[in-house]
Amino acid sequence: MNQKSQNYYEIYGIPRTATSEQIQAAWQKLTLLKHPDINKEAGATAEMAQLNSIKKILLDPKTRREYDLSLPPEKTKEGKIDMEAYINSLMKNLNININDEGSSRGKNKGTNFTDVMKKMNQDLKKDFFLIPENDYGLLYALRSAYGAKKDGEWIVTRSENDKRDLPRGLYKVIRENGEVIIKRSIVDWRRKDIRNNDIEINLKNGKETVPFDTLFSEKILCSDKTHSLFTSNINRPLNYKEYLDSIKSIAQKIAFSKEGEGINVENERNVIKKYAESFFGNFRVEGTPVKEINPDNEFVPKVTDDNFYEKLRESGSCVTRVEKTHVSKEGASKGPFSGGGESRG
Image (cartoon, rainbow, N blue to C red; front, side):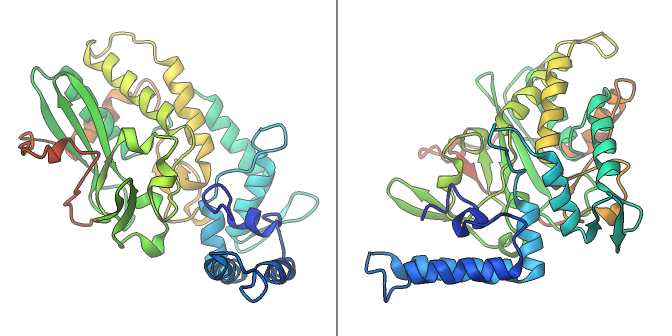
């Protein structure tokens, strides 16, 4: 059973819309095949324990809701994202019930699939920069690093507008020998129930445990092997490498131009929009009613060309330049991950 490449519904062989009865039936069917009393293969006990754990999560409305909201959009057989099914799933988990006519009823009255899709499509079609609130600090730090005359490090903390219960330290930008790299915390990519736990990492020579607020290099976070590196699942956004490359590209263009000069960032803006679209279930775009969104979602302001630089300047309060970390003989500071060391907000 390959849990790394399959979600819980795929392991059970059921759709995400499965009822409790279907979940129970799938568990019973798998039990007949996988129970250690029947299956004598190595690892049968662990496999059965996993099936029991999945059943417990999916049959509990609260834990199932949290799990469903962590999943990326489903793709059709043609490889395209089925946004209608995805939005319906989101609305179901937000206690919004859709009837056949498209109207809604339940706790959040007055919301329906058509309204949500219409609003999201409007946001994606307009010339907004849909950059997450905290990443303006990253953009500011990157611009500083590219424009700096010497090497250094820039610490990026979460925006004061981010009220989530997360460590303050989010990014570190390092310029060394002219090269600029990013390190990031993955706390907000982990399930809420394990966010405060140390992170266990699979290495060639065994496993290593690092603090929960460790900052990981972009090379690790953008790798195809990222998910196999961590022993517990992380919810890395789709298109993350392309997104970081676009943020870096914008930062470089800003660093080497004067404010007010026309710079062409249309390609970067389109990549960022795709990133926001792919991670829609984890973002709260400006203007979306708070009551309809998971409070654990990250805020995304709608920023236009006219107020882009103003937003960037405001984010400077989240960035601190520090003396470059001393590199020991073991080269610790050059490693792929390092301690965050920031307290919670």
